[in-house]
Image (cartoon, rainbow over all chains, first blue to last red; front, side, top):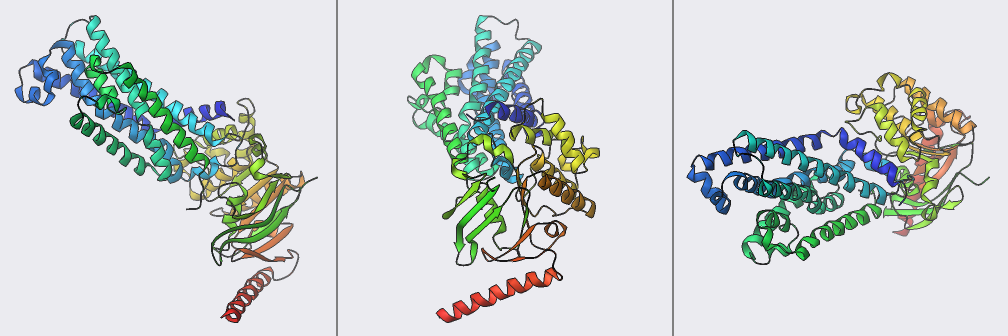
Length: 255
Length: 247
């Protein structure tokens, strides 16, 4: 792949100064952490209304309650955040008018696409690590006690759920390319979240076969999701990444 | 030595008189070739097709003797271009933008800083090096876009309306850098909708109208503008007669 190393450096540099990515990470990490801690504290204090909204998770207490609550928030929140940021990463080239400068270069557009996905997923991992760390600190701060094996496993699943949400947002990049701007990708992201909710409600026993719903189902009920169902997630992401690369290669700037 | 750029019978039609409708032109080493035409004449479409941004319906484009479709990726390092809008990420500083452009144009991490120094000096934007592109005036953004196009010292430059928004000092800087690079053997294709300072230093001036090259201008001749409008008017009249004759 021509120029992948240069493309990775360029995309990393752009990401490091991108306020959209910084704001996305702060809103996701801060929002999920603070909301999760306050909802957990509310349930522990006996708030029935909050407990009713959290469903099955509210029947637990301590770290499982905290991690389960944050996982519910992150299930939709991370996909929304990463869908928006990925849409921006691809769509801003059109709205900023920089797409013309990405043609006729020794760095191929396939390399540029791979670099965008790689850097964005790397950023998702960093955001997931920050979120997990913040939840651990918040749990200690509200008096959930020390981290035992079960709590550490729960936090590990939360980290994976958040990071993997960066993968399942891949269709947003394809849509932003076809729609030539971030809005098409953002609309697609919202559609994905709705579809995941519908899949869980309409097909409760088979919804884990839906790669967008599988990460959250696995994080909340790990015993009910198979390895085969989890294996579909990277296949799904790679498929949409390939479609995005194809769309960039076939792109014509005549509109 | 083969032409820096050769276009033969290029067609990309968007309608009966819109787009590029059979254009042939050459840019030889050491030559500045200006493409002058009114808005909508097809200049930008031709340049986009040359750079692979759109596909031709028919015809061919060769860069350095190699058909564009078969050019190895590395060969694009020898082509610098500015089409439509400057290559400038608003959140990056002028220097960071140029370093990004240098890396994308094949320069190594070691070679890029020196090339960036030369580019900012060449386009007179050294004092804005640390300024974010979003804070630049339109003219300075254009200078940044031109510096990005030229940063890797290309053999062929394709610049669409490069004097847009430039002040007189910017036009002179551009004119001098293009002339200097052409004198070293580079080829330059530059477009304009009027006979600006850059078009006037061209070695060859082709006039484009409604998708076709309708003639050339002698830059040493008097009343260049009048000759330009005469060519355009004559072409419009001829087409009107053709349409009248058909109906």
